[in-house]
Image 1 (cartoon, helix red, strand yellow):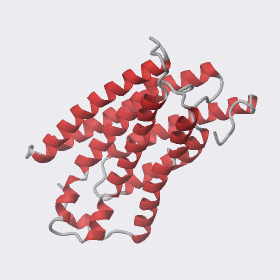
Image 2 (tube, one colour):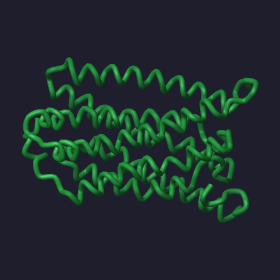
Image 3 (cartoon, rainbow, N blue to C red):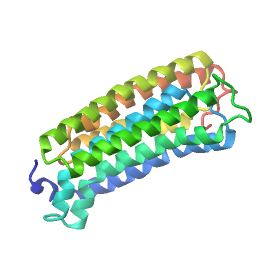
Image 4 (cartoon, rainbow, N blue to C red):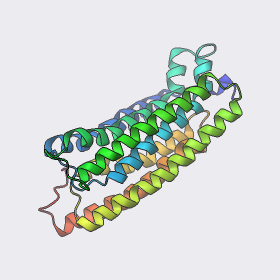
Amino acid sequence: MESCAIYQNPSGFGFLIGSLLALGIYVSYIPQHLKIVNRRTSEGLSPLFLLLGSTSGFSSLVNLLLVSSPARKCCLTDLNKFQCIYSQLGLIQVAAQAVGYSLILILCAYLTRPPIDVPGSNEEKIGRAYRWFLIYVVLNAALAIYFLFFNADFNETMAFANFSGILSTILATAQYLPQIHTTYTLKHAGTLSMHMMLLQTPGGYLWSFTLFMQPGSSWSSWLPYFTAANLQLVLLIMCLYYRGRNPEETPLLG
């Protein structure tokens, strides 16, 4: 476990950038939320893309929750309020991403239901994905609570944190494959917001770097977001290409 000294020299500029990044991460999802609310359809959104992305985000949240636990212990003994908040910026950023992405699945599950359930429809598949996501959250939350409060071996805690980070990376990689296939099949973005991706893709690289530079950081914390940024760039290029071919079907800010 690291010494509390590594958290005692926070950068004011780094705190500002990290705070703005946390806000920007959540704000970047708002166009997608609004598009679902306004259109009341999940067309163009792969249920598997939403499930894998939501579970990946929650796995990363568990990872940062465990990785940042030594800093929270230092908050009780050696750190002032500013130092404490700065030590948790990575966790705050990951929480903003997990909530913002999961809301896409939640909104689709509750706002895009047809009057009559149609077996095999996209809405029915999204409802099933939402139920699996809830099961995943409950199981991982229980494990996180165990390692935070009942397990005394920090090496075991870090082993599970690294496992969660690796799992998040695998899920983040897998999540883009069905969405890339869906977009390729439709030949347009559908309900997928290009405005969101235009904000998130460069932000993903910046975010990966800030997590890498965070005091006490672990490779398993920034790797999922670096991987996701690369794959989201591929998806964004596809959407921009199809928009260029059919500009009347997919407005840039839709």
